[in-house]
Length: 180
Image 1 (cartoon, rainbow, N blue to C red):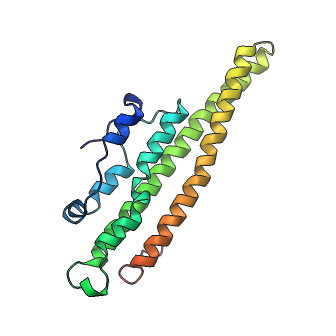
Image 2: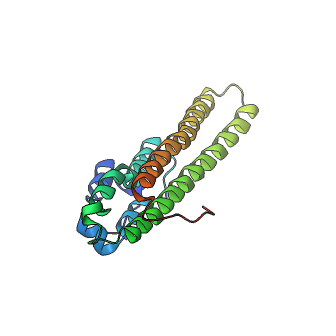
Image 3: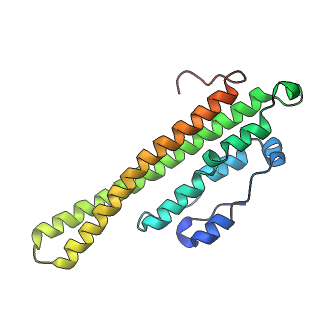
C-alpha cells in the first residue's frame, strides 16, 4: 500500500492505513514493509503541529515494534538453524537506519521551514510594532518551533532505545559497519 501525504488525510485515516506487521510479511518481504513505514511518500505538512506529530508517530512504528519483531524473527538457540538471523538482523539494521534518517530529515526540514516563518514574522513585527495580530502569529510560530525542536530530543530517546534493543538481540548475529 502506497503512503499518501499526511496533509491530505485525517489522523484516523493515517493510523488506519498502516496495517500491523505480520511475521510472514517480514520474512517474505524482508525489511521493505518496515521501510515503507519509515519513509512516507509525498510532502510533509509542517504548518500544523498536530499533523506533524501524527506523521512522526506513524514513522516511529518500526521503533515501537522492534521488541516484537526481534522476538518473532531472531531465533533463540533452540531454533537457530531454521532462520537466518544474520540476514534478519541486517535487514532490520538497514530499516532502522533508513527510518531514523528519514525522521531526522522530516524534523529538521520542518524546523527550517518554521524558523524561516519566524524570521519573516520578526522582520514584519519590527516594521509594525503596533500590530497585535502579527505579534500573536509570531508567538504561535515561535511556540510551534520550540515544540518541533523538542521532537529532536524525543527522536534521540526513541533511537537510543531501539539501538539498545537491537544490539542486545542482534550483536552475535550481525555487526554493523564501523563507519555508521
